[in-house]
Length: 232
Image 1 (cartoon, rainbow, N blue to C red):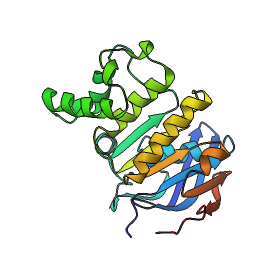
Image 2: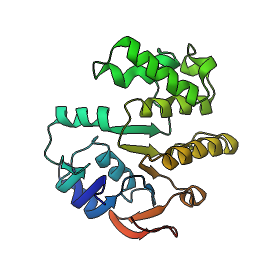
Image 3: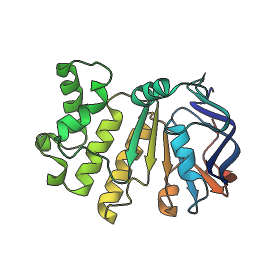
Image 4: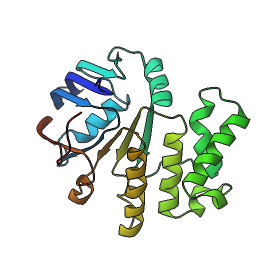
Protein backbone atom coordinates (compact mmCIF):
# COMPACT_ATOMS: atom_id res chain seq x y z
CA UNK A 1 0.00 0.00 0.00
CA UNK A 2 1.08 3.57 -0.66
CA UNK A 3 1.10 5.43 2.66
CA UNK A 4 -1.04 8.53 3.19
CA UNK A 5 1.82 10.03 5.20
CA UNK A 6 5.52 9.37 4.68
CA UNK A 7 8.30 11.17 6.51
CA UNK A 8 11.83 10.53 5.30
CA UNK A 9 14.65 11.83 7.48
CA UNK A 10 12.31 14.55 8.77
CA UNK A 11 13.91 16.95 11.21
CA UNK A 12 12.87 20.15 12.92
CA UNK A 13 14.93 22.63 14.85
CA UNK A 14 14.18 26.04 16.32
CA UNK A 15 16.77 28.80 16.54
CA UNK A 16 16.42 31.81 18.82
CA UNK A 17 19.54 33.90 18.73
CA UNK A 18 22.37 31.64 19.88
CA UNK A 19 19.94 29.03 21.23
CA UNK A 20 19.32 26.02 18.97
CA UNK A 21 16.73 23.42 19.94
CA UNK A 22 16.41 20.19 17.97
CA UNK A 23 12.78 19.06 18.29
CA UNK A 24 12.81 16.15 15.81
CA UNK A 25 15.84 14.15 14.70
CA UNK A 26 15.64 12.61 11.20
CA UNK A 27 12.33 10.81 11.68
CA UNK A 28 11.21 8.05 9.31
CA UNK A 29 7.49 7.30 9.63
CA UNK A 30 4.65 5.97 7.49
CA UNK A 31 0.92 6.24 8.16
CA UNK A 32 -1.31 4.12 5.95
CA UNK A 33 -4.77 4.79 4.55
CA UNK A 34 -7.47 3.96 7.08
CA UNK A 35 -5.01 3.66 9.96
CA UNK A 36 -5.61 4.92 13.51
CA UNK A 37 -2.24 5.83 15.03
CA UNK A 38 -1.55 7.35 18.43
CA UNK A 39 1.52 9.47 19.20
CA UNK A 40 2.79 9.41 22.80
CA UNK A 41 5.69 10.84 24.75
CA UNK A 42 6.60 13.08 27.64
CA UNK A 43 6.40 16.86 27.42
CA UNK A 44 9.12 18.08 25.06
CA UNK A 45 9.52 14.67 23.39
CA UNK A 46 8.57 15.96 19.93
CA UNK A 47 5.02 14.65 19.59
CA UNK A 48 3.37 18.07 19.25
CA UNK A 49 6.08 19.18 16.83
CA UNK A 50 5.32 16.10 14.75
CA UNK A 51 1.61 16.94 14.67
CA UNK A 52 2.38 20.50 13.57
CA UNK A 53 4.57 19.18 10.74
CA UNK A 54 1.94 16.67 9.61
CA UNK A 55 -0.67 19.43 9.66
CA UNK A 56 1.50 21.75 7.55
CA UNK A 57 1.46 24.29 10.38
CA UNK A 58 5.25 24.27 10.57
CA UNK A 59 7.84 23.61 7.83
CA UNK A 60 10.50 20.91 8.04
CA UNK A 61 14.07 21.90 8.74
CA UNK A 62 15.27 18.88 6.77
CA UNK A 63 14.05 15.72 5.10
CA UNK A 64 10.87 15.05 3.11
CA UNK A 65 7.13 14.92 3.81
CA UNK A 66 4.92 13.08 1.32
CA UNK A 67 1.16 13.48 1.76
CA UNK A 68 -0.99 11.29 -0.44
CA UNK A 69 2.12 10.42 -2.45
CA UNK A 70 2.95 14.08 -3.16
CA UNK A 71 6.15 15.58 -1.77
CA UNK A 72 5.07 18.82 -0.13
CA UNK A 73 8.33 19.54 1.69
CA UNK A 74 9.21 22.56 -0.46
CA UNK A 75 5.71 23.98 -0.86
CA UNK A 76 5.18 27.70 -0.31
CA UNK A 77 3.09 29.03 2.58
CA UNK A 78 0.15 29.56 0.23
CA UNK A 79 0.42 26.01 -1.10
CA UNK A 80 0.60 24.59 2.42
CA UNK A 81 -2.42 26.66 3.43
CA UNK A 82 -4.35 25.14 0.54
CA UNK A 83 -3.25 21.65 1.61
CA UNK A 84 -4.44 22.32 5.17
CA UNK A 85 -7.84 23.53 4.06
CA UNK A 86 -8.54 20.77 1.54
CA UNK A 87 -6.75 17.63 2.70
CA UNK A 88 -6.30 17.80 6.49
CA UNK A 89 -8.87 17.91 9.28
CA UNK A 90 -7.93 19.20 12.76
CA UNK A 91 -9.46 18.35 16.13
CA UNK A 92 -8.01 20.40 19.01
CA UNK A 93 -8.23 19.99 22.77
CA UNK A 94 -9.58 23.54 23.12
CA UNK A 95 -12.03 23.13 20.18
CA UNK A 96 -10.85 26.39 18.48
CA UNK A 97 -14.36 27.44 17.52
CA UNK A 98 -15.12 31.02 16.52
CA UNK A 99 -17.22 32.44 19.39
CA UNK A 100 -19.12 34.95 17.23
CA UNK A 101 -20.38 32.21 14.87
CA UNK A 102 -23.11 29.68 15.52
CA UNK A 103 -22.77 25.91 15.12
CA UNK A 104 -23.71 25.87 11.45
CA UNK A 105 -21.38 28.76 10.60
CA UNK A 106 -18.45 27.23 12.48
CA UNK A 107 -18.80 24.00 10.51
CA UNK A 108 -19.00 25.92 7.24
CA UNK A 109 -15.84 28.00 7.80
CA UNK A 110 -13.37 25.77 5.87
CA UNK A 111 -15.66 25.75 2.84
CA UNK A 112 -15.66 29.54 2.50
CA UNK A 113 -11.93 29.47 1.74
CA UNK A 114 -12.61 27.06 -1.11
CA UNK A 115 -15.24 29.14 -2.81
CA UNK A 116 -18.07 26.71 -2.09
CA UNK A 117 -21.48 28.32 -2.54
CA UNK A 118 -23.46 29.28 0.57
CA UNK A 119 -26.20 26.83 -0.32
CA UNK A 120 -23.84 23.88 -0.72
CA UNK A 121 -21.87 24.82 2.39
CA UNK A 122 -25.04 24.97 4.46
CA UNK A 123 -26.24 21.64 3.08
CA UNK A 124 -22.97 19.89 3.91
CA UNK A 125 -22.79 21.48 7.35
CA UNK A 126 -26.35 20.46 8.26
CA UNK A 127 -25.68 16.84 7.30
CA UNK A 128 -22.60 16.73 9.51
CA UNK A 129 -24.30 18.55 12.39
CA UNK A 130 -27.07 15.98 12.32
CA UNK A 131 -24.48 13.19 12.22
CA UNK A 132 -22.94 14.66 15.38
CA UNK A 133 -26.28 14.88 17.18
CA UNK A 134 -26.46 18.67 16.90
CA UNK A 135 -29.57 19.09 14.75
CA UNK A 136 -31.28 21.13 17.49
CA UNK A 137 -28.23 23.32 18.16
CA UNK A 138 -27.55 24.80 14.71
CA UNK A 139 -28.17 28.41 15.78
CA UNK A 140 -26.40 28.13 19.13
CA UNK A 141 -23.03 29.79 19.66
CA UNK A 142 -20.11 27.97 21.31
CA UNK A 143 -20.66 29.48 24.77
CA UNK A 144 -24.20 28.08 24.72
CA UNK A 145 -22.90 24.53 24.27
CA UNK A 146 -21.36 21.96 26.59
CA UNK A 147 -17.74 20.93 26.10
CA UNK A 148 -18.79 17.70 24.43
CA UNK A 149 -21.08 19.56 22.04
CA UNK A 150 -18.32 22.00 21.17
CA UNK A 151 -15.99 19.12 20.38
CA UNK A 152 -18.68 17.58 18.16
CA UNK A 153 -18.87 20.87 16.26
CA UNK A 154 -15.09 20.80 15.90
CA UNK A 155 -15.20 17.22 14.57
CA UNK A 156 -17.92 18.16 12.08
CA UNK A 157 -15.81 21.13 10.94
CA UNK A 158 -12.81 18.83 10.48
CA UNK A 159 -14.88 16.53 8.25
CA UNK A 160 -16.61 19.10 6.08
CA UNK A 161 -13.89 19.07 3.39
CA UNK A 162 -13.63 15.25 3.42
CA UNK A 163 -9.91 15.26 4.38
CA UNK A 164 -7.55 12.40 3.62
CA UNK A 165 -5.90 12.84 7.05
CA UNK A 166 -7.40 13.76 10.42
CA UNK A 167 -5.15 15.06 13.20
CA UNK A 168 -6.33 15.13 16.82
CA UNK A 169 -4.42 16.81 19.65
CA UNK A 170 -5.62 15.54 23.06
CA UNK A 171 -9.26 15.78 21.86
CA UNK A 172 -10.74 14.67 25.21
CA UNK A 173 -8.35 16.63 27.43
CA UNK A 174 -10.98 19.20 28.49
CA UNK A 175 -13.86 16.72 28.86
CA UNK A 176 -15.17 14.63 31.73
CA UNK A 177 -14.73 10.86 31.51
CA UNK A 178 -18.20 10.04 30.18
CA UNK A 179 -18.20 12.77 27.53
CA UNK A 180 -14.63 11.94 26.55
CA UNK A 181 -15.61 8.31 26.04
CA UNK A 182 -18.46 9.40 23.75
CA UNK A 183 -16.05 11.49 21.65
CA UNK A 184 -13.59 8.59 21.43
CA UNK A 185 -16.39 6.28 20.28
CA UNK A 186 -17.23 8.79 17.57
CA UNK A 187 -13.59 8.86 16.45
CA UNK A 188 -13.59 5.04 16.45
CA UNK A 189 -16.63 5.13 14.13
CA UNK A 190 -14.93 7.53 11.74
CA UNK A 191 -11.88 5.28 11.58
CA UNK A 192 -14.09 2.23 10.98
CA UNK A 193 -15.55 4.13 8.02
CA UNK A 194 -12.06 4.53 6.56
CA UNK A 195 -10.78 7.83 7.94
CA UNK A 196 -7.04 8.00 8.61
CA UNK A 197 -6.47 9.35 12.11
CA UNK A 198 -3.32 10.44 13.95
CA UNK A 199 -3.90 11.41 17.58
CA UNK A 200 -1.56 12.83 20.22
CA UNK A 201 -2.41 11.67 23.74
CA UNK A 202 -0.80 10.95 27.09
CA UNK A 203 -3.57 8.50 28.09
CA UNK A 204 -2.71 4.79 27.90
CA UNK A 205 -6.41 3.86 27.83
CA UNK A 206 -6.89 5.94 24.69
CA UNK A 207 -3.76 4.46 23.13
CA UNK A 208 -5.21 0.96 23.44
CA UNK A 209 -8.02 1.97 21.07
CA UNK A 210 -5.58 2.65 18.22
CA UNK A 211 -4.04 0.20 15.79
CA UNK A 212 -0.55 1.55 16.39
CA UNK A 213 1.27 3.48 19.11
CA UNK A 214 4.33 5.54 18.20
CA UNK A 215 6.34 6.71 21.21
CA UNK A 216 8.75 9.65 21.15
CA UNK A 217 11.60 10.66 23.42
CA UNK A 218 14.02 13.54 22.87
CA UNK A 219 12.85 14.03 19.29
CA UNK A 220 13.25 10.41 18.25
CA UNK A 221 10.94 7.43 17.81
CA UNK A 222 11.74 4.90 20.53
CA UNK A 223 8.95 2.42 19.75
CA UNK A 224 6.48 1.84 16.93
CA UNK A 225 4.12 -0.95 17.96
CA UNK A 226 1.10 -2.32 16.15
CA UNK A 227 -1.19 -3.13 19.13
CA UNK A 228 -1.78 -6.66 17.85
CA UNK A 229 -2.99 -5.38 14.46
CA UNK A 230 -1.46 -6.50 11.18
CA UNK A 231 0.70 -3.94 9.42
CA UNK A 232 -0.83 -2.95 6.04
